[in-house]
Length: 467
Image (tube, rainbow, N blue to C red; front, side):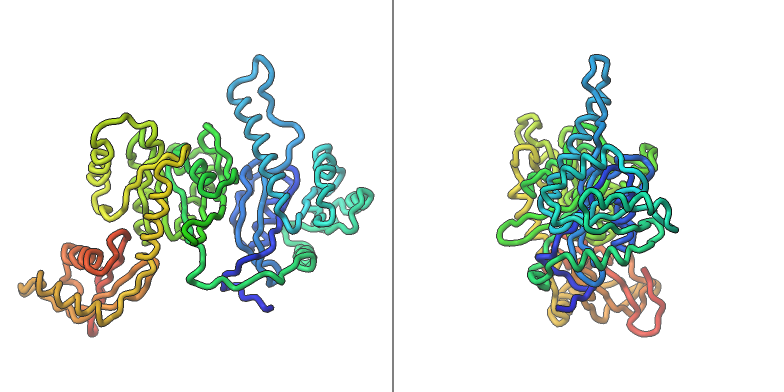
């Protein structure tokens, strides 16, 4: 079967990159993807959660996973004088290793990445842990550009490995040989083309730090792929997971919490936040996680505005609703407050949930299914222009000498995101108020009530475009 990188596939083999911290796993991950996806930084332990993406290696589709580094020496918080921060660090280290080992169990192939030179105690312990999967391991020694320390690295064959690949993830040396070996070791017989109507609905979980994104991700996927901790900023990369609901496959993207720019001080967190924002482009629908106890913030509004600009479906997800005081009409009051603060986003549904106990999660998914149907709705041009005639009769364009224009016809040029073009005689004369009127009529009359709708005004003859 010949594969096309522009198409989507399912039942693809799983390739896991593993090793101790700072050997270059994320650099190799990005090299195999041909672009920067995971965060690379000299600070050990930058990658915490397993990061899973679709990838093409040597012309073949795979699920590629970058894992957190295996650490022999955890941060210690056991002594009587240990700070709570140290205890948190120790707990996170244990979680990182636990996730990495769990990910190895589902791998079709493990690429064990080591650094050129003598093995460390961490390397040796990790090699022993990998013994049960010995027939699924390829060994690559990184940072051997120009033959650097390659002679010492051949000693790895004494550990029972049949072959060792000397590479430089940073410079690309011999990575092609590793890619060919990866493909040769995998079985692609079960891979199938992913039809458009059966493609997963992609959900991005966005919001401020510690609003429950990872807790909801784990509940949806019935897993612990995302590390849950009270420590803000625990999730740094975009973590992908999958689940099924009502016969429909979903993919969920758990992202780093987005803080105000003045709060982002670490280089690592800067890239995390930017990657979370870019995940909006990869998603169909955004679950904007809002802490019901804290209420809506300016940062929530900015995140929603980003999703709106991209034309993504947005569900305002009030998390921790189980902790809200039992006030009569409390939910209605909160909704009124949100509608007042969000202004032009009255179309976005609001759903109260508890990611911790699951309350409201089914309603959230039902809403997502309805929203996805609207995102992919296509209105026939004839039906659109019949509706346009009614709209123009209900609210005719202005007739003044400076404000006069005629709307000739309209077409829908795109779905998901939904975009419409209206061809008019004098684009510069069309006011924002009239554009808003047309947008609202599309939502109300044509079945786009829950999603952002893009409206563009173009000249019907040779006039210059406006807006």
